[in-house]
Image (cartoon, rainbow, N blue to C red; front, side):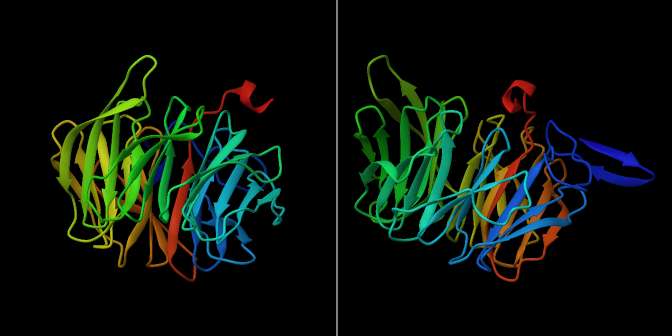
Length: 337
């Protein structure tokens, strides 16, 4: 929502209002970006000011993820994963996870943020227990992994790779339970799934999104029913993301734009223009009213989706901003005790 204070428009993302971050800890909105300049930056969402910068010691930051309770943030580099305390000024990681031998291109948390998954250009998907050393499980994709997500049932992972394969990994059985090849030989760049597990989308290097309706049967694997093929961009799609309210699909591209599509009829609703170079990543606010994007033009932007305006620019990185993360969800008091 928007509030006017003293004639100045103030942006409030999602369920929480973020006041200026004067001191640690516990900002109500956690907004962060990762860059090829080897830094992780935290931003005050409303003012656009950077209040914390962490130097990644040995590589660019490819992907970042914030835990649901806003306590931890993970960074995917080459080849290490590092986890930092969100509510601290300590520049050192709490933990470093070693095991991948190439760029880590995907990561996320599940099981109340006690477990983590990752995907890498080394061709593997790995599972990690944050309380233990090393990885606990490894799946061989046989091609560079570009995207990995967890099914809302937390019993399956879905990965997309450079050879164009979408694979479903059964975490209980420790094996691949389903394999899809939407377009032979065309790399899958990004995968997204609705929070209720009803839809899945995979986007590829040809600018195409493949949409499936997901059907889960008792005692059976998730079934993918083809729903739509969407020619979304002329260039590469770098990220696809279903909105939290399952009303829209956002796609970011090498054509410098972000597009919003209706998931009801797959019509184009908006084209967000303003970035000067490739747009690598995006994330919705929890109420789906705002979108944050990350671009090779060294900036991230906050977009008001009610009118398509870029209402805040986060500038400070010296090289391409390739990932962004936002957590503006309300956290129950019991979650932080």
